[in-house]
Length: 175
Image 1: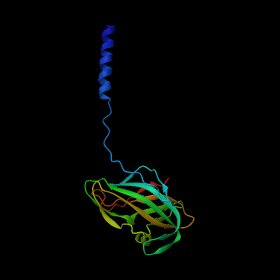
Image 2: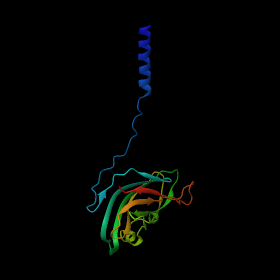
Image 3: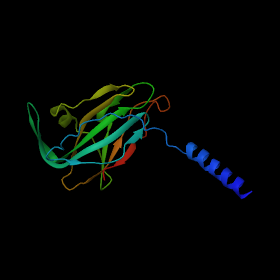
């Protein structure tokens, strides 16, 4: 009887061992690492979703007194903050993504809109079609009061079939 129980336990262990195997890892792209820009801090935050758009904040530069573009130098009213952002389309169809809709929330709770003139001077995108499976990387520029600290990016992905107006953003803490 003991031999039968031991044999049954061995068979059971083998069967459960087979069913508990991990599925093979999904293949991934090998994207080359890039150096962080001299005035920037790399951010290592988990991606966040808003609707069908995934947001990955990868860099932050704060306290920039001015910006230089190809044809102009532009002084901040306070300080420029630059966020390096990767957006990816995760839905079944594309969305019209609006970079100017993103907002920065400061330590005092003030909500700051993207600085349109800074975005233009630095030749960053305005609105574009973000297709399914498409990734786009760019900078967002904000002009904050000198003493303000950036705390949260309020990210808006764009209209979806379930949220046609996309009224609710997703807050992403910067650290």
